[in-house]
Length: 65
Image (tube, rainbow, N blue to C red; front, side, top):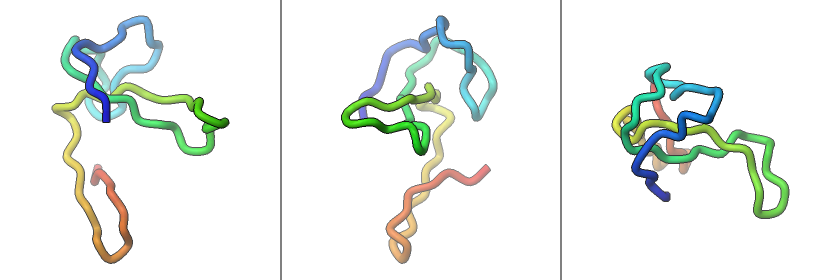
């Protein structure tokens, strides 16, 4: 996962977790169903907002809301 130093404020969408465009580190998360070859649409999510959980039984990484 690549980490970017600042939120790209040119984006029309805020972080989906905190609903802000704070200039802190972000990662890009691919939007399901948008991948074509090596290209995909993605959203910016603040790294500090992520609290991921791994479910070994289902081999799934997710975030509870």
